[in-house]
Image 1: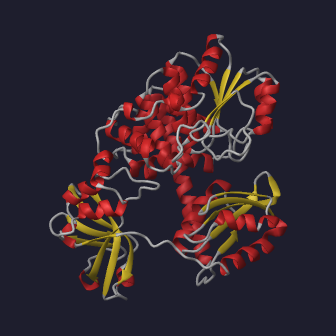
Image 2: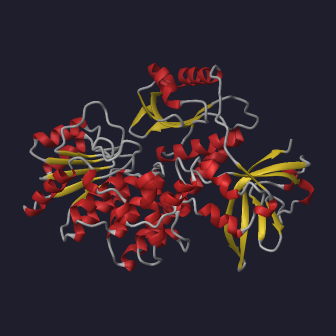
Image 3: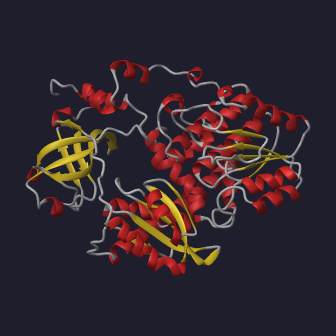
Length: 525
């Protein structure tokens, strides 16, 4: 290692001091998480729920169809079960109900005689449904984290990281907010509920700073294999950490809402709230089978699109496909990563054939949210962020919108953010340095895993898999370079290359390797 140590390079990469680092790795307990009663009106929320429980009233939780909404709803249902009080719940179908509580569902709740509705991961913009519930004499507790408007719905109590002034610097997930309510209601932080909440921090891409990071660290470090079967089954033998949440757990939960067009998604709440290991196995098998369908459909759709785009030179891509709405974002993201241009993928709205619904993904330097505002005359609805957004337009406006969007991209001077990296050498690829990097974990939004760069690698010395499609180059006894989809034919056009990637531990054929997993290559200058 050079005199300028990897540790110092990591401090510089994250722009922190030695004192900041010591704070990052300090031993944690739940006392390090700021009290749930720092949420404004948390005491009122607990009092409201306790009143309905004491009167044996009917309570329903209304959740959402993504991993945040599923885990948030499960946290509340399980918390009430800890109090020996059964409540009902409803997870809407993406295809039948759409996002959030709506007036039709509000009327059904009124007709069924509920006394209290708790929304989780939705509700902060549900003005009309909440007004209906209140006028019918039903109390409403909103537990949400989405961007609030200037006015708020007429709920009895709203628990929200920013509206309730729990934090001014960052936000958190719906399930984190539900967990904090469960802590206040139960009087203690439950480990299982905390673990569910930590899944949502990764799945909903919350900034891994302050209490978000601390809660994830607590649950990762405190996780015991076989303690929580519902989580263990989704891990399939892997450790519980930031990587496996993002790659193994969250996609399986999200797959249901993406693929299943019924209300069977409500089975997931049973999966996460019943204790019998044998009873949850059928739910686990169902979830995994739908995830396989999700993966296959996404891969197939992307490959078909890429085949039809051979030689495509456009600076943006706007296309129509025959695909479930729930898969559009995954396909758009995959195409954006491959083509390195803004991508919009649309399909016919399942509830209104005259409309197209779509998902958009962008590269650094082109803001989707601003572009949709500029093109709002073509759109029926839109929302989202700079790099990920959704939209709805009339089918008859497709060509005009496509032309206008392409023109907007053409005349936008793209200034992508330069990606930070840390220069290392071949001799730095060892377990000590892997463990040093891991001491900065967990990694996620606003706290990315450090990108490492190996310079001036001689292509003729690389080794490949048997089919010559992947780089697998052994360096020393238990270290190797691995690059998937980087064929010998592709590499042979270069003499020397620079490699960008990350360090990881890999077990193969009973051997343990430190691997430099290659993300991308560049020709050496």
